[in-house]
Length: 324
Picture 1: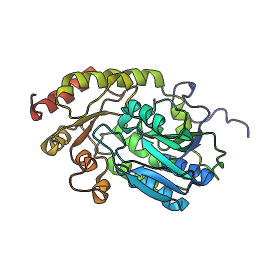
Picture 2 (picture 1 turned 90 degrees about the vertical axis):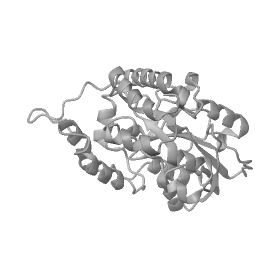
Picture 3 (picture 1 turned 60 degrees about the vertical axis):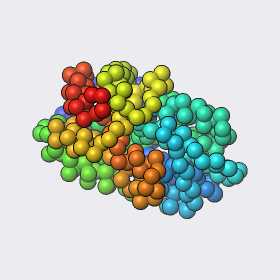
């Protein structure tokens, strides 16, 4: 079909730029990418962390693959003694984009052909020598859908393209035109619409937006913001973070007594998510995972913001932190 010329104007976007992962399979979500991978590789079991959203577990259920949970220590390292059979896989999440060193230790411990790295929270973390790497660009950029899969396995192409992008884009447009609060209900609806994990191709709208993003500028801004928050709050952070292994992180993960601070941040219109409330139902009362659900604050440090916003976040947090 010939490209249309003339007529009404579309949304104005910069000229397309090269994309960071041009060879990736492009699906509508990370969970859909995971389902496509499961169908291609057909493992008998997949070892999964307790600290994980339910959506990835639904992909296992849909593929008819057994899930075996494992625990982690305070440094996001696997603390269980996992004995992988030849037909087993192990999925590891690069939490918040701060687990590069843990991945190095993991690759020395298990066969790369059995490792799946979930980089949904680590868009800038390069693929490693492993079975597969999964990315979720919509956690980093304003796209209505998107999940990437890098693997040598022959994955079946999706049957059709996602057609829900226009409806999902309303939350981002509403935030741009009005306020963050005004678009939140539409955002929740958009997230719910992606619960269906049958693989579809990433939408044309998401592809075009992603090719418009200055990905390298976003990386540098995230790194600078993260470094500033760590300088201000690191002494109060119960997480041990190695700045040398961090590049383009999702957020600044602050582990502290968050009972009152979380509510105060939200009152100040500094929005922090809770990852993931459903985890509490499958772990013990004194588990490390429950501690993360309760007290880990993912402070925004993304490329939309600069020094002024980071100062506001730090000044809001410090009165609530010991030594602050």
